[in-house]
Length: 210
Image 1 (cartoon, one colour):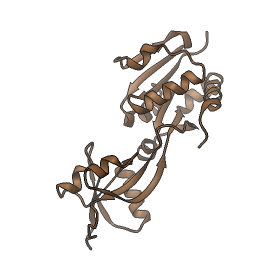
Image 2: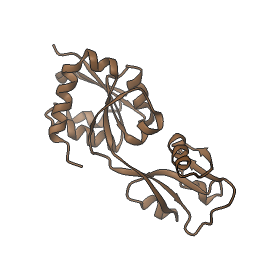
Image 3: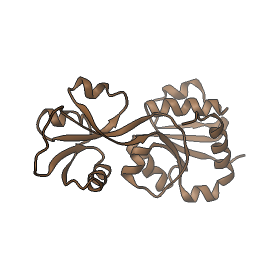
Image 4: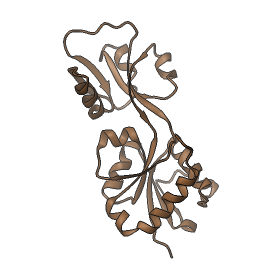
């Protein structure tokens, strides 16, 4: 019997695209896998266990070893800076991190307020630009901040730009392109290297080129 592999992955778009990749790599995931409301899903046929987590928690589960592997957006990896290895760019769930705000908004001479759920990423970016800002941490509806006067600008994920447009905001600066990555716990990689390498090699065959 091969060793059990535990994989943490987020629900939503990343989950759907990652599940499709696994199927293309000839992993036998049952149809009901996609619709399960369980937080832990076992696939005995593949000796795999999936932990369904919030996107920001995937890297934590992998770092602490409750999951051997995880599928996480590069945005989460940049923000969380966890002790994990990145094995493969899956080239799915493409988007980018950007600075956005109201069009024609004038920059104040004092430190501007920037709302974001990525305070570490935002702080690093503006520091590298030589710009002093005040970071306001929010967990959702980031686009609301400039509309109600909470912040001058925001740092957030942009996919199609439709959400910005619908809220009267424009993209001001491009920070970094984002895709989802396969990550691994360093200890798991040593103990289950053959099983993990097999998974990586099979996925690499079906990942679409960047």
